[in-house]
Length: 158
Image (cartoon, rainbow, N blue to C red; front, side, top):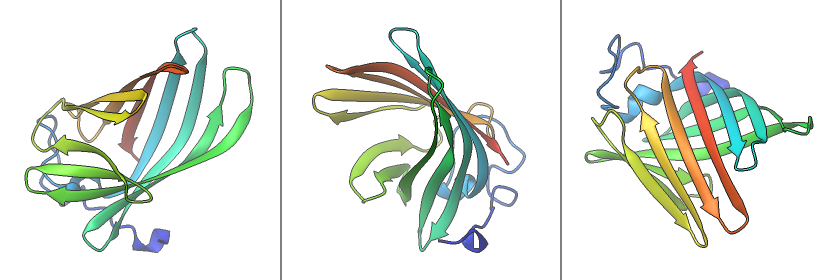
């Protein structure tokens, strides 16, 4: 996917100019977003990511490509990327990993949907907050035998 293929439909979609109420269509997410992420570990350490998320169409799906800089609590700085695939289904959005494995489901028209992804022995619980859309967040609580952290991802129009 090239950036030339990215179409920003937020200005013409059903969410244009409105706040709250949840997503109404997959097209609400199309385009470029600023992405800030704070990862707070159970021991108090905090890592920070700053970058962008580009949601570009590939047929009926949106491909989310995240890229930016991650700075760890210890001061290490690395380039970080991540890819997800978002697909529309009746009444919901299915989020897949970049390799097309299922990740989680987001119901449409819910302002603060919650869902969980199980990857035994780990558990990933997320709460989305679309009440201030087009600004929105995904807050993750991640627990497992070797991990415990909270990750807040804030998206805002670029």
